Amino acid sequence: MGEAFKKILFAFDNSDSSKAALQSAYGVSLKFNSDITALVVTGGKDNYFVDSVDYLKQFNKDNNLNIDIVDRSGLVHDEIIKLEKEGDFSLILQGSHGSGGWKEKWMGSNAFKVVSSSNCPVISVTEKASSQELNHILLPLADSRNTRQKVPYCIEIAKAFGSTVHILGISKNDSVETKKHIKAYVNQTEKYLLERGIPCTIAEKYNVNVVKTCIQYAEEQNAGLMLMMTETESAGWLMDSYSQQLVNLSTVPVMTIHSRDTRVSGAAGY
Image 1 (cartoon, rainbow, N blue to C red):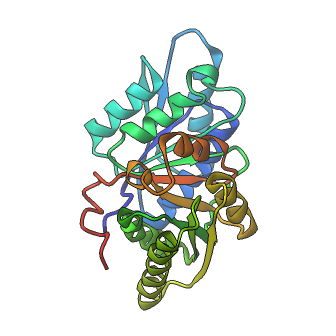
Image 2 (cartoon, rainbow, N blue to C red):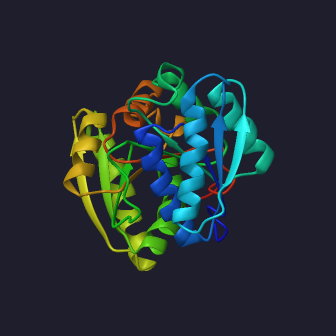
């Protein structure tokens, strides 16, 4: 994990949410000394593609950066995934919703296709979440052993930014067995973080709407990032529809991680 986020792929379409994602990409690159590649998928007709390149060039100049700009033609999510695999990127950043940009070509399920198809983590950023700093991180834990596979990434980010991690044990159920499992995961994770010098808080919420509660709790903690697994947590609470809701509705950036990510394989047990 020491080389985490060395190569960032940034999907840019000149929308407000992608401009916010650019700020987040810049913030991550400063902490991890990352190289950033910006992908602009052109259709050859719309002015916002030209505007996108102009905006990126100006951002480069203003921040003394050298973001590599790649111009592709095709389906947006397909081109993002193709480039990710070609370039062996370690992180993708994208705008998650908002007006402008790729509009209906990018909204809703198309944005989630990048999340579900990528091999590396994806951070989806809303137009309101443009801070380059990351003082607080929300770490939800579900009733699934694989829910803890995201902890190594959480530690990398928290160390780099000096963040406080807010551990939230959460489930739509409130059975004795569910509470037992989640309490164990919460306590183990708290111990694991504290042993590594990561400040953290713990809380548990049961018999709740998971998506709404995660978003509300993230807002209460002023979180700049929420970490979640994708398919591995579906047994607990993150069915695909829930994952899509978090990516599309969250008011804070959401980082999604796959169990197939080789960087975290074997990390479920402490």
